[in-house]
Image 1 (cartoon, rainbow, N blue to C red):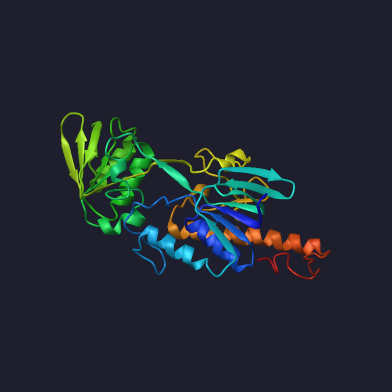
Image 2: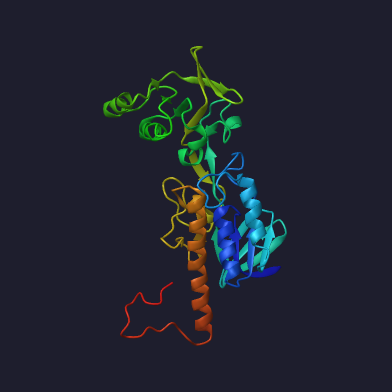
Length: 316
C-alpha cells in the first residue's frame, strides 16, 4: 500500500466535493479521486444553486476544487479502478497506485441511457433536457416537446406545462397511457404524437423527423432517461442496489456495507445540484462521527450518556 488516508472519496461532483470539504474541515486526511467531467458538463448553466445560479457546471467544479486547497486533501484526476475490503478498512487502486483508507465514500454518480434515436445524444444538455427545474426557466414560454410514454411521459408532460402552455407529448409509437391519462392531457391542452421517430436534428432548435416523413419543429425537448451506476465498485464490494440500480443508503448515507457511504445522484432522487451537495455533507458528517467514536474508544473512553438526559441530547 503506497499511501494511507482517513477517507477515500470516489467522485468529484457536487456530492464528492462537498464531502471532501466537510471532511477536510474536520482535519481528516482525504484522497479525492476525480473520475472526469460532471454528468451535466454539456449543460450551459446550472440553476437553483445558491449564490451560483446560472454558473456553468464545469465552473462550479473548478470553484469547488479551489475551495479544497487549505485542507489536507489530495486530488487525483483518475477514477478508482479496483477496491478491496481489508481488516481495518479498504484498499483502492487508481492510476497512481494503491491507497488505503479507514472509510470509503462513493459519489461517483450515474450515467444517463438515452433512447436509441439518432441525433438525440448530440443535443443532450443543449436543446434536449432532463429536468424542468434546471432548464425550465431558460425555456419558459417556448415550444417544447416531452419524449416518453406510460406514466413517466404523462407526469413529465404535465410538469413541463407549468413553464409553457405550448407543450406536446411524443411517445415514439404506442403511448401505453390509460384512458384517464389521455384525458388529463386533453384537459390541459397537451397534444399527443404517437408516430415512431426516425431521428432528431437542428442546432438552436429541435426538428423531430417521424418515420412517415412528417416533421415537428420544437425549441426544446425534455425526457426522463434510464440510468446506470458510473462505477461498478459499489456493487463489487457488496453494496445493495435497488431496482433502478441506485445504491441503497439510510438517512445518513450509509450503505449496506460497514464503512462505506454513498451520496449524490448514485443514491437516488431528487437529482439536483443542491441536493447532491447536501447529501455529500450528510454522509461526510455521519462518516466522520464514526471515526470520532472509533478514536475515542481507542483511548479507552466512550460517549457515555447522562442517565437523566433525553437519548437524543448531544447527537450531531
